[in-house]
Amino acid sequence: MAKAAAKTTAPATSPSVERRPALAGRTTTSTNVKVEVLPPAERISLRAPETSIAALSKALGVTLPQKQKTSASKAGRTALWLGPDEWLVIDEAGNDPLADCAGVTALHSAVGISHRNIAIAVTGAGAAATINAGCPQDLSLDAFPVGACSRTILGKTEIVLLRKAPDDFRVECWRSFSDYVFTFLSEAARDGAA
Image 1: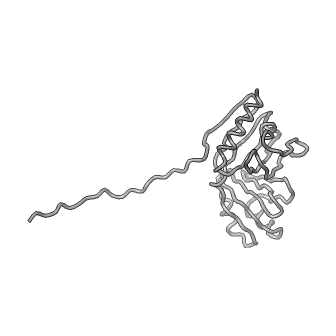
Image 2: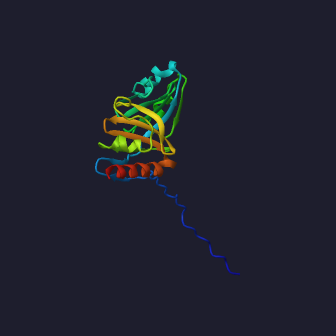
Image 3: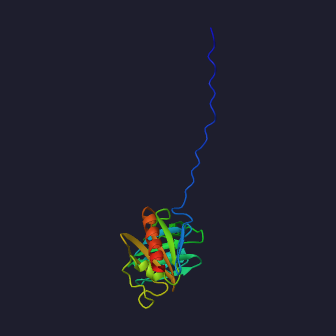
């Protein structure tokens, strides 16, 4: 009677998964505008009553703004006022704002949205005109000064807009709409250069 040959199998290996940022490395440059996808950042959507603002500001290391259309920045972290009890907190320094909020006992809701959003920089002398090609927001420096932010629209998509300098804007959008937003801004930049 013949013996069956023993089966040998290769050791199981774990699949390798690499998350690639949406639109990584895409840039459009025209005569007076540059549209560029920014590196990944940590983000949280933060909701809290007024009584919790001081404790959260201390934990985050940046004072949460309390006036409409305002933002505050410190050490690579920016807090954008989106409503009376709502902020978008963006950390570009590699720190985790969600972890910083975890120890706060004051009433709040902090949700990590780092993989939901991407950011696109629109810079140069024609930056405001490029954004205004699809955004009804008044981007004059009087109405929307440096540090101003708002939740608004660009074409058919909701965005969060931050003015970092007179000719420097950060456009935050959902990852699923990022190709549309980038393409819209790129076409507007090219049209403005013509």
